[in-house]
Amino acid sequence: MQGIFITATDTEVGKTVITGAIAAALKARGLNIGVVKPLASGGFTDNNGQLVAEDATFLMKAAGINEDKRALVNTVCLQLALTPAVAAVQAGITIDMPEVISNCRLAGNEFDRVIIEGVGGITAPLWEDYLVADMIVELNLPAIIVARPNLGTINHTVLTAEYAKQRGIKVAGIIINKWDEQNAGVLEHSNIAYIERLTKLPILGKFPASETISVPDARVEGLAELAEKYIDIDRLIKAMEVSV
Ligand SMILES: Nc1ncnc2c1ncn2[C@@H]1O[C@H](COP(=O)(O)OP(=O)(O)OP(=O)(O)O)[C@@H](O)[C@H]1O
Ligand SMILES: [Mg+2]
Image (cartoon, rainbow, N blue to C red; front, side):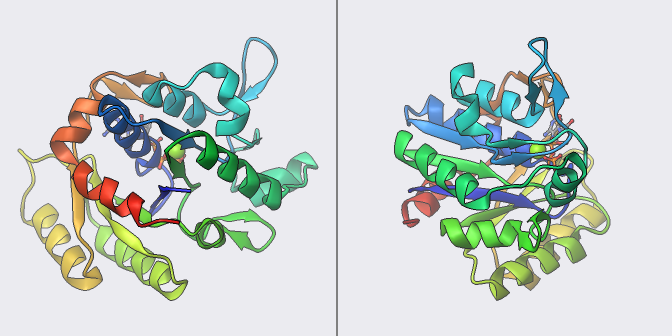
C-alpha cells in the first residue's frame, strides 16, 4: 500500500487537522485518497446509540468519504479518553491488532493512497506492549511528525525523531502546526532552526491556526487551500510513492 503515517510529539498537537488537510489537498488534485484513524479513544455516542470517533468524522468529511465506510476508516473506538491499551481494558475489550492492521491494508487496497492518523505520540500503547511505533513498522509506511511551534517543542520533536530512527522508521519530515507567521519571534524561529539542525529532517510545512477549521465541530472549510499554501504537498506525494 502507498501512504503515510501521521504521528505527533503529543496528543492534541494537530494530527487530525494535518491528516485532513493533506487528504483534502490530494483529493482536490484528483487523487483517490483514503484516510484511516484505526484506533480512537474518547468516542461519543451518536443519535443511533453508536460509539463514534470525532477524528474519523472530521477525516471522512475532509477526504469526502461516505458514512458507510466508517468501519473501514475506524476499526476500534473506545469511550474513555485514555490511551487505547488502557481504555480497552477498562471497557473489558480486547484489541485485535492483526484485525486493525488488516483493515488498514484493506483501505490501502481500496484507495490509491492512504493517510493514517496515529494516537497520541509515537510510543502511545495501543494494546498491551504494542505501541504506535510498532504499527508504523508493521505497516512499513513513512511517517510525518506534527509538532508545536512553542516552548518545549525542540525536546519533544528531537526525542520523537530519534525514537523513530531507532525503530527503523523513515520520517519524511516535520510539519509545524498552529504556526503564526505574523507574531513569530526569536522563540519560534529558533525552535524551527534547532529542530532542523538536530533532527536533520526537512520541515514540510508551517500550518496556520484557522477559525474555519474545527475537529470537534467537523469544520473542514479551506483545508485543501491552506494545505496547498503551507505544506509541501509535492514532496509529500513523492514520500508516499516510495512506500511499499
Ligand atoms: N491549524 C488549526 N486551526 C484550527 N484549529 C486547530 C488547528 N490545529 C488543531 N486545531 C484544533 O486543536 C485541537 C487539537 O487538534 P487535533 O484534534 O488535530 O489534534 P490531534 O493531535 O489529532 O489530537 P488526538 O491525539 O486527540 O488525536 C482540535 O480541537 C482542533 O480543532
Ligand atoms: Mg486526532
